Amino acid sequence: MSTPRFGAGIWHFATYLDRYATDGYGVPRSIIEAIDLAGQVKDLSVVDLNWPYFGGEFSDAEIKTALERNKLGAIGITPEIYTRDFVKGAFTNPDAGIRRKAHELVTAACDVVRFHKADYVKLWPGQDGWDYPFQVDYSTQWQRSLDGVGQLASENPDLKFVIEYKPREPRVRMSFGSVARTILGIEKIGLPNIGILLDFGHAIMGGESAADSAQLAIDYGRLFGMDVNDNYRSWDDDLVAGSLHPIELFEFFHVLKKNKWEGVWQLDQFPFREDSVATATHAIDFLKAAAKGLDALDEDALREAQSRHDAIGALKIAQKALFGAMGD
Image 1 (cartoon, rainbow, N blue to C red):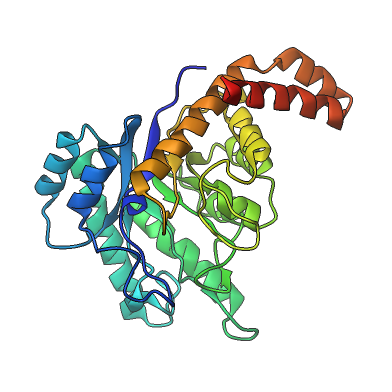
Image 2: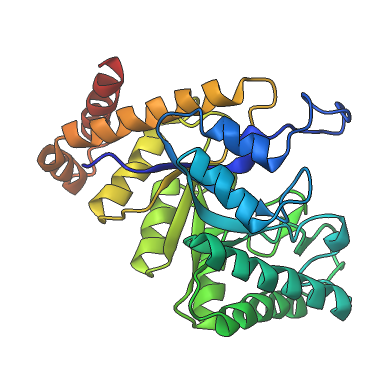
């Protein structure tokens, strides 16, 4: 296959807080500084940008100048509909005024997408969900999720909207919590400009096979984007792609290639304690090896093994291709 384009969430190059290191893992950076770091990663071509821009007051033109200085483009804009204002939900908030605020924030982000000529608006409604039994009326909750996304997509038919589903965190249960539930919702809305951004780590922490989830989204024509990372399955650790589940990630990429899916291979990693440039470079080196391994994969032998449901035969073929490419 041709070498894919590589991208990363700009947050990969920011600094982080948690509930223990409340003073942060490193000196805070502005989005301009993060873009300049991203520009040091040789094979990176695009970034997903948080909006509003973090670390200061910056115009779209200033961000564009920083991107151009680093030979980067914007693949997506992620409006922050998951912050303190939306602790009880964005699209599903019980307060109609907060729901309007979420709508207005995303609507403003649409113009940022147009300015940067990005591929999509990324919706991660992390606060839409619930934590306890009896806390919400499930029918109302689900309908508000669909209405919120559907209204935005219908008002902006020139743009693509991607929903990044996740089983949990920050809510214990999230409204868009699985690939099947998200596809069901998108199909019920029924608009062509809504799709899925499939995060490998979100899929596996939810007990899914990421390859199977990708195939399902492709079969419905809804796989608009993807993120890669890794975790121990119990939590969204956002570790380096390929560090824990390389064969499953390789299978995920194989499904993309088999279906001629040509989107960006994008990093969604959080290097809390590691050098962000070195971490991104290392991850991309693995992704490049995986792409090379796909070219070396004996597709005829794999199809024959799969036709017999020959697990060991198929694994040998996949392992030889991936690990041989990594050895190179």
